[in-house]
Image 1: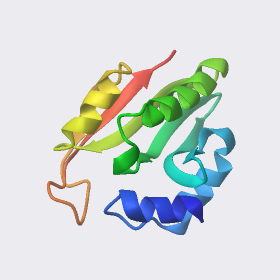
Image 2: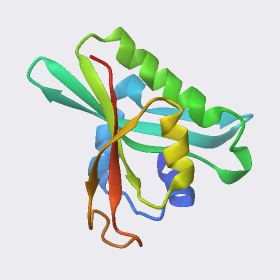
Image 3: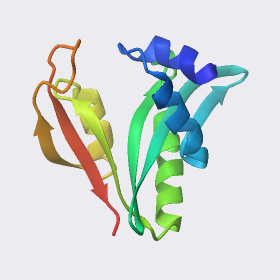
Image 4: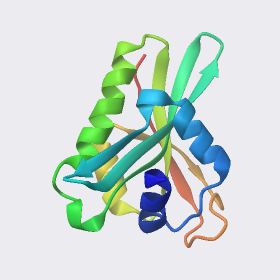
Amino acid sequence: QSLQRLNACLFPVKYKDTYYRDAVLAGSYTKLAFYKDACVGNIACRLEETGPYIRVYIMTLGVLPSYRRMGIGSKLLQSVLGLCQQDPRVVDVYLHVQTNNDEAMEFYKNFDFQIVDTIFNYYIRLDPPDCYVLSLRLR
């Protein structure tokens, strides 16, 4: 429920039940960040198994505006990247970023994510509807 409430504040998208199921199934790859007793940020991932390998898809990473620039998003991402480094089956981490989201692009570039694709008309109800696929290759 904390994740649902936080997502409603952070993102212009209503996530389906499959998102929350995948987030729970990802175990430690989904985390909430708290400041005092308030839930202020999250990272939610999906693990995609392909034969002996795993790709980690970052479904969402967000921090409430008044708690940004405090390192919370970085700590959430570092936590997941640390898990990925420990598991030799994880080959990469990837996500989609709306093409006009310069702040997110800078954030992920600081962690060495690279643009590997552009998908036109990816988002249905957002403007612009296009996104970049960012990837961090681990192995």
